[in-house]
Amino acid sequence: MPNPKRRHSQQRGAKRRTHYKATAETWSIDRTTGESHLRHRAHWVEGKLYYRGNVVVDKSPATEAPAAEGETN
Image 1: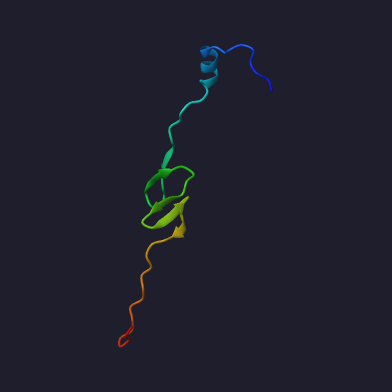
Image 2 (image 1 turned 135 degrees about the vertical axis):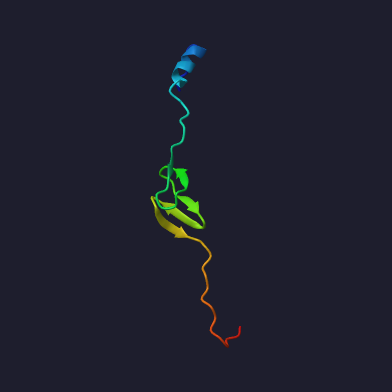
């Protein structure tokens, strides 16, 4: 397995690492809910998962129909 014959300088390693930069995340505002979210990511709002303005998953509590009069459990 090849190994370097001599130690690389610190400057040489730093030159190589100059291209690794942290970038700020891009945020957008959802056109349906008005909530801010990361671009190209789904986000939860009030128990619903939205992606590109559409509901993908709905986990909000379902409302039950009122029971008919005279029924007992």
